[in-house]
Image (cartoon, rainbow, N blue to C red; front, side, top):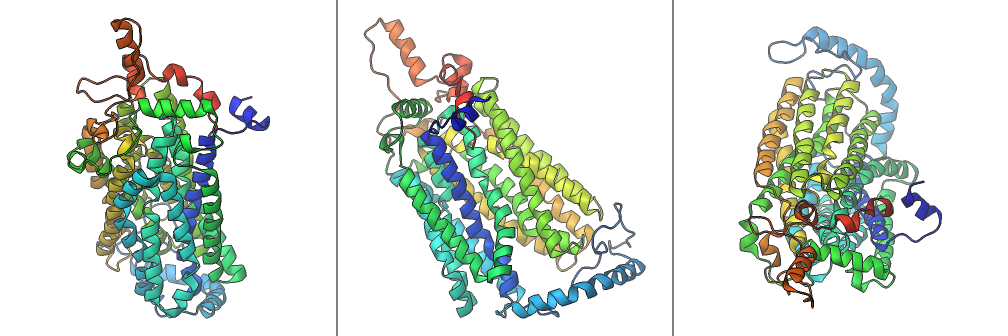
Length: 565
């Protein structure tokens, strides 16, 4: 039996850092339930005017389940009149069957908001979300990542309790609440980077961060069906109350069971504490953090801009899927709302599976010293970016087959799961002391893409829901993916940058002098501090494995001791 499973089954206490990982996983699940439940609630909150729901689709595939090949089109890419007539006739029976159900839903809504108002309310979250990314990262470095992480989720959860009241008051009141939730949630990812730099040994980061960070996919998968069940049973306000309550309960557990550093934790074993502290010191984490970040060095650092670029590119493709593919499924493939919700969740399942597999694979490669950290980040970025680009383009040529379309999307998102080994922890590779700040910068670029891509999609579609127009939308991913990936391949690095130590209480991790001769003392110091590349940058533990003694011997058995989240 695997030793990890044996430890759990025999009642041995999990390492504190793994307990922290489990709590962080649940925190990210809560984060996305709070963030995304309103999208489901709006369906029940708003009165649906049949006239406003008139479709603008000119070439729907006959309600889904159409032919796998392209349906005949004229020179403009629109269905011929005979095909449209056939589609209208085939859809009439289904429309009659759903009329009674849709009428009942229309009667339950209590708010007279048009689609533009609904879109405005939902979008205000992201305007707040962009503002506090960088500031949140610095706050986490200065005051403790666990504090900022927990406080962010707690505040956004408390704001959920105001959603029903503010929605009934005025849509602008709800927009303010959503804006404040965006402000509150923005520091979460930068704060977790700060937590990881203090709590996760360098040789474990790839395997640790992937399953924890991408619990967001689990949050999306849970939010949609769970919110629907609550709304159907208790009314639309219950989804907001549940999201808020879950966040508050989680926050209480988080603050009770975590601390800012291993040295401050009351229940950590001496062995685990020493292991963590020695590992992160060797990887470049200093004992203190400068009150002023070295902004000039950060903004002039090529690896930093490589991270910003690849996060922008990944954010572009991801936002197109999250915001636009449900519309594509409804208007082009003709899927019902119930089918749409299920199909939209499947790619996130595939992505989370990919996160686990790629993080485990590349984590093993790093620990065994088969590739340097830099090469692992670059190889996995190719898988993360170029494979999805190819499959998303294939989606636009999949015709009217819902099955083929979903299969292609799931495959694209499975390969996108390599993000866990590509750049998720690369900010910590580059600068563990300023990882929160770097994550804030990159996440800002990500969200600029998330706001820009839907705007460009609206400009391309322009109320013409045709396969040709959607093909252009999917093709926009190709140049964005390729250009940002090339930038990452050229400038990315897995080495700690010299400015990581600027302004710190200590320039480099130090070894106390040895009483032996000079040669032995030099050898000992090199083994403790790490190695430097030809450029003079401090190498991480994986790169050190290529040049001499590293954490490999110390962490050889970690694979058998570290439970997966």
